[in-house]
Amino acid sequence: MTVELDGNVRMRGDTGPGVRVQVLADGHRLRLVSGNELVGDWQISNIGIVVLQEGFNVKAEGEEFVLRTEDDVALAEAIGVAAASPRIARRIAARHNPEAPPEPEEPTPIRSNLGAIGLAVAGGLIILGGSFLNLDGGGNETASGGDFWIAFVMGGVLMIASAFVMSIGTRFARTVAAVLLIAMIIAFGFLVSGTSADASELTAYGFIAGGLVVGVAVLFSGSLRQPD
Image 1 (spheres, rainbow, N blue to C red):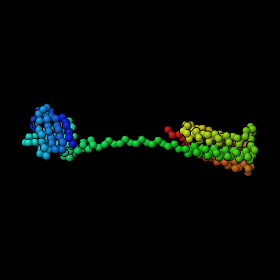
Image 2: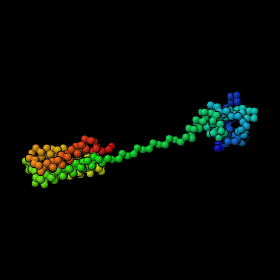
Image 3: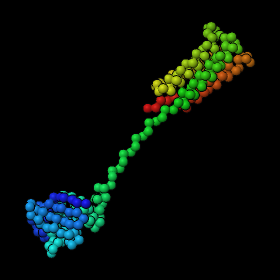
Image 4: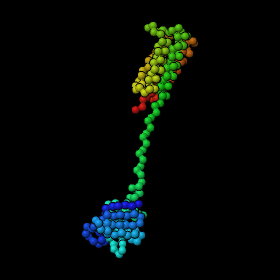
């Protein structure tokens, strides 16, 4: 490793400003040049170098001087005296250690479709129950003349449609699902209380009730919440 640095040489004990020099060093030689004048050219193994808090104390050919440079760490590494100073060694280690790699970005949360699937299953059960009502009772009517089986079939279809819309990421799916479930529960209450259920209708009631239970379970499990 070869370095070329700007530096300053001051004789040991001298209080003056010293002399500006250019420092050339590799693993074998240390050269100091001031302007066009060669100040010194030494074999590193023939001189004594002590690392100071700031700079180096150099003994060469019977003279002793203090050498300071713009980058003491680079010079210490070039002339092989870094290990003599824990301070320099730490600075070299800090310089050569790569920066800590950036933390990987958190993966985008995978959207769960469990809520949508559960809601679709609930809608399918309600449709099936409404179909059985039509087959078994030929259309059970309320006092106002509305057909229950149509209400449940249409409600189930809307729940499946809501499940599909929710699966593609549309917000407010939880609110829509809750409104549909409440409407189905009210209709089921009217159905059970306003008609005489015979054995042939129990299967229809079972499917409708099962769909409502699944829908409520999905709703209260929080699976219909959209990710932020």
